[in-house]
Image 1 (cartoon, rainbow, N blue to C red):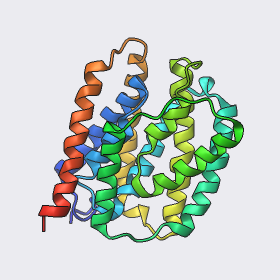
Image 2 (cartoon, helix red, strand yellow):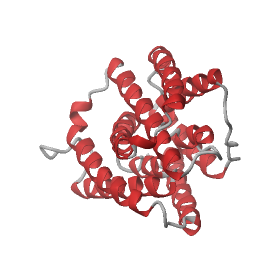
Image 3 (spheres, one colour):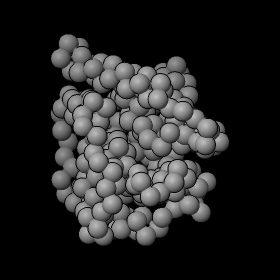
Image 4 (cartoon, helix red, strand yellow):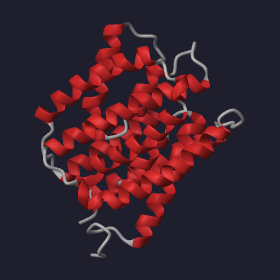
Length: 250
């Protein structure tokens, strides 16, 4: 073990993780969605599975928090407050139901959830009532505690037709920031030690802030069609590699 790296993480792994944090933050800021799922798939190849969801969540807290701050004047706070209320309820429930699943089961859950998000039917963008917004905040927060990347689910109701690009990105970032903050509190309450991963997390958050700044400057001009297809296949291959590790690796 290197003095400043957690067990099982090499210097090359660190370089890749920091670089990919910047890239995926830029991607989410520029095209509105997808960075968290891609980062989860990449991190799952390098980070021990028992640390994957909590570490990914704290990195995403930094990424979304930076994006929310940079676009704070565009946040729809009426929607965000209702989502956050539900997220608080979901986090409270998660404390009681988060259990130590077998590590291979966690890998499979993450892999199949990623494949579903990429290839499954896309949730319709809906304008929900107040009570349904609270419910959505609760349910997606509970799911997030188990599989990590619920961004596409949250986006199903944040990406509304009557919101422009910046309000959409800003409101989505605010909702996800609070969800990841609450998820971190859940993992702390069940005994996860973030201190062991603190340097990794801080470096990934810092590079993510740079990526967010670049992505927001690309937001008005970027055409993402080809990029989205590349993203779909890269994430699929990473998810399939997780399945391979479960079934064929000792």
